[in-house]
Length: 208
Image (cartoon, rainbow, N blue to C red; front, side, top):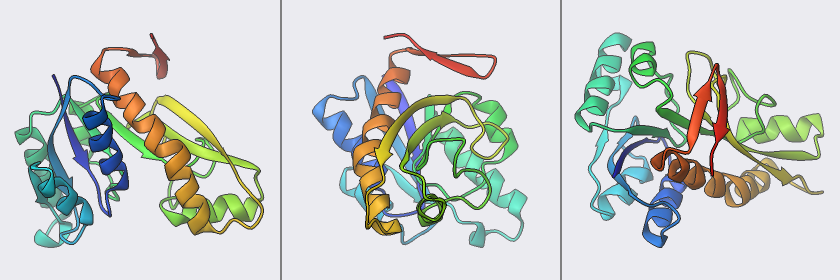
């Protein structure tokens, strides 16, 4: 049974997609052991608690130094004994010691086709604003492993989404979530749970 820990800062729509996928069998042999948010009012915590999942807030505002916050975050993660950490809209820079300890075991969902519209400053609606401003015709989402860079880790899965005339950042954000994020994130977790993802020199391969 794969033990996953989900980190999220906001409403938790991707968390809900994971929970639904476990319930309906798209993700098998997997259990969410804990949800961590850096925001006390994140609705993701409510989603988790309503589902009987351990849910905690670890906020940088609770600590005087960034290093103390990172220590608390790492301790809370370690206490969950996760096999895989899933960043589902977690707006916190992951400490290097955590990345090294869980190498190729931290998975992130990003709402663009990396390497487009990613890296520093590209998060949330800013990603979709950037895509619309540039005038691209295709966008999408990417699931990747986390390394020491920003959105630079090995890519696991990507799914394209067509940009339509009249799209606003909000409309596009919703379509990318529905057509891409909520599809490929559960699939990536299930592939990981069954040992189907392999990383060699920063490149992933999938065995079906």
